[in-house]
Image (cartoon, rainbow, N blue to C red; front, side, top):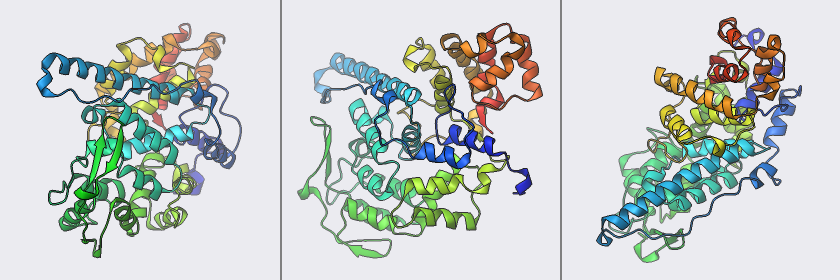
Length: 437
């Protein structure tokens, strides 16, 4: 990148708030420089957060599956109850993301939800999904080894990837395969025999739906030894994670994943990748890796624009308008998330959601426009409505944390300056707000 084409210090700080945070609330975009903004974002999250305290997590009592022998009516009733709990959990998380004063922990929780993608549609039980969500939040900014060791025996993950029935003599390969391919190493850095051997190491784990916990049954565990990636030992789940993370491919794979979601669609060059791996280091430091990524020149490249994922677009709007998701009328919220193709706790596959251009379909644009009108009608747009019509376009940009609009967008907004809600709604669906530029 030509250094003379880099975005300004203020624009880079704005990118940080959009990408490492969850978008600014009114007044949060101060004149602080890039490093001060980064320090403020990643240095918070270990103290009590008033926004998090104001949005306590729902609780769901442990609930056993209704057996087929119970008949269709009880099973239907349970399905409806579980679907309602899943919806309640999703709305709670949106409310929490909109309310927190320190957004970095929630932003990283969302990133890990896409990385260790797990769907309530198969898991069924919202309490298991909440427990996984809490694990991602607690461990998602520190040592990746600790996080990966928790996730490989996470109850929701065991259900999702069929790890809860693994036993000696009949190992299920699904969890072992996805843990190597999608969570730690990437495609091409393991063999089919490695998958089979790793699956043996993961035998013995069970999910107890009475206590919502994962338990280890020694009698069902294959004592080994197994040979994985050329190394023989009697592995268990933790030992397998340690082996995977010692592979040279592991830090490079994770660095690429973080880079693609926070910096650019264009992969880092070899020298940059080496710096990212160095920052990650022997302590598997997630936050140090992220900080090194956003300090790279590519982060300030005008070409490093990223399309906002639908949930991040929505949460940014909720924060700007000081509006909880639970205040939106139903079915408007559900229809919007479904139409945009991203509902919390329901990724389409173990590979998670796509990034970039797939979110810019014509159908998605129409859904985004309709949702934006509902948001603007329900949220606090006082900073715009209290401004004289001649200044409302600039006031709208400030409200949404934008530097301004292109001439083309201004031309579309100008006829709406006497209709503040409509003005904000169109601005929310504009290219400037849809893309983190």
